Image 1 (cartoon, helix red, strand yellow):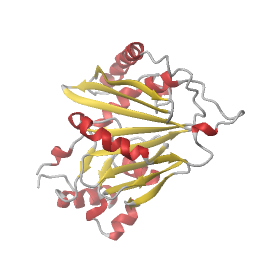
Image 2: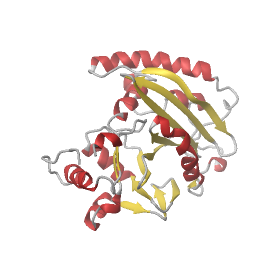
Image 3: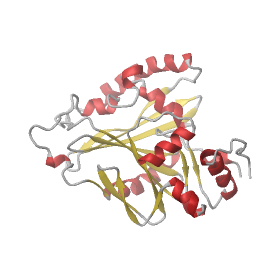
Length: 290
């Protein structure tokens, strides 16, 4: 079986996600994996219930995997949750920008936001081409921005293509008192509809720590200098300052093709080689067809 079958496109890339259920205890310790059912602490900001059949990687482990795979890290990575036998993952980053006011909740003009993203992507494509990468085409909304004023969650999804390959970027922003938890669902585009109920079920068991919920805002708290629209077009994304407000799309999608989700039961031999290569320093290990 070729490992290429396990490539999944999405927004949170460069991560090599390993199911721990076939590894020995020393590997588990090195990976710092929490197996469900359990409650995982997402740094000092939040917690989430990890169901049976899922694993959670803390921020340190997530950053280590990204670094070992040669990918840049923002330093804001705080966790990753994934089922052990399915092809999706949920990636968490926290941006301590402060309290984001939701007074734009009725002013999220999807057409204008998409036009802004496309304009920014044109500039980003020039940067991509200069770096020897393929340009991206923004196809449109898979889901226009939608804000839930009860949960204070903002969701949207963008479809794009690169070299004829579909890319799906499904984003959720969980607003808190001190900042925003950025959540990215990484899944193959044709599996989004069947995955969304499970993804939303996971987030239903997410909560900010006491004192950090959106409702606990107090006068004098730090307030973000932007609103909901800026979250959609990427004002808080890594690299925005260097590449321009919208160039984060290029960074995000560039890494998307490098995401490999490994099902241990199906490719246990390849999994061991990957662990040796990523965490054991054995550079001679190679990915091969099993």
